[in-house]
Image (cartoon, rainbow, N blue to C red; front, side, top):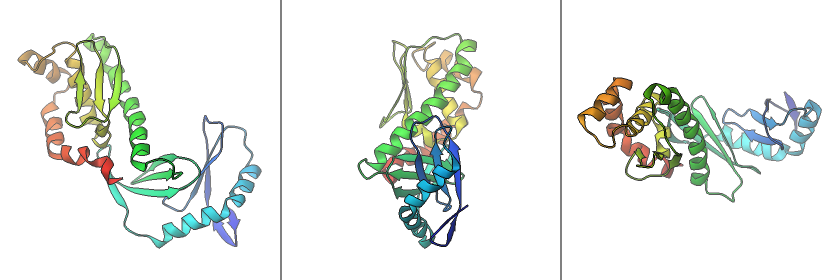
Length: 225
């Protein structure tokens, strides 16, 4: 707890692999400090006091309330909380996505890039879980902002996934990844292909149905930021 202008400000410290210190005001009004290992609490408190006007302004904006935009993220609706700051930072806490931006970058671009990295981590983990048991080899994996499809597999073994899949539940993302991995075995949608999909994703019809029902929401998700 830190006292600024006779107001008690709650703050948390997250030690991360980074070279600089970043300050972010979360939607809860709590200040989050991200810093490298070895930074003292005294230094952090002095830094927070220097940034006191910016911190208090953002806390007051949060307290005034107002309707927050929403977006599907990993299958659940989350509210978007945007504030201007020195650094571009994004953090996800419960039902809120905090986006701090420096005014020099398009917020949609910032969130798209964050989503690409988040989805890449998920997709690569799924691929690693299945590649050996499926006995497949692939070339490259890429996250792209595609308009019409959720994924693709080229004859060269390149796997592409739509970044907007980040809005889908994890089991739906897993289905799309398995679907494309099966194309490394059958480059078509034959009975043999669907038999392979069913082998590794028995509930694939339900997952495909979710995409058909909610796909239009995902396709427009970044325009709501």
